[in-house]
Length: 164
Image 1 (cartoon, rainbow, N blue to C red):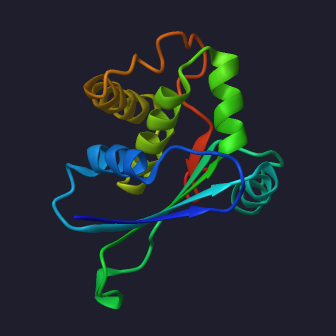
Image 2 (image 1 turned 90 degrees about the horizontal axis):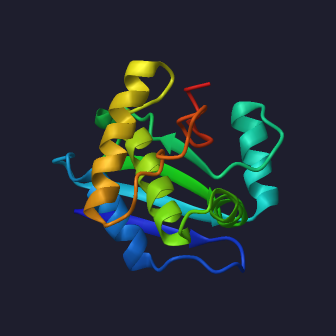
């Protein structure tokens, strides 16, 4: 079971909680344990501050993943971690890349959830494995391959606090 805390820290519109839950549950279905996570939807200022604090990158990014790094013996809850998503960046990217907004949202939520599960895209083999899983999950939702038109960088600007 998924315990999802959805936080809207901006006045911008966003997908419904049911959509976020659907995308998270799809990405997390390989996990047999219960999961507790937070998705915080933010404006560009907060996204930029967090990206600078955790990655030393001075710009607003689309999604940041923060896996829970607490040993199980210290926690009596199935805490998976947090995603912070910048609504304005997601909307801008979808428009610039010619992608349907809902498909881009689904991709970034799934991508972030996979980071919480330990997937990464630092080296080519890891990137191929993660992207293949993303393609499969998005196809189940009826969305196109998010990497189909990427000729250079095959990963969105997504990271965990430990990956860069």
